[in-house]
Length: 99
Image (tube, rainbow, N blue to C red; front, top):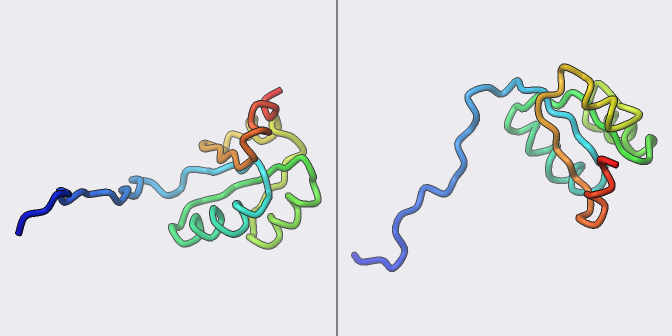
């Protein structure tokens, strides 16, 4: 049978290690309803979260059993446990995150 589309291996491979520490910037809907459930299902290690509204980060941390809430991006980045940073912000807010 002929196909105009070749068989593509489009699914991503799981990393060799699942214990890289993930630090999250932003505690909005996409983190709560997509990223964190997917990380949990995959067995990834989320070590902490920060948000411009600390109470929002605290609520997300409590709901998803994230052990640390950082007061700032700088604090998150200085934590040696954080090896991967997931920035979940609106595109128009992304540039201001590092300033």
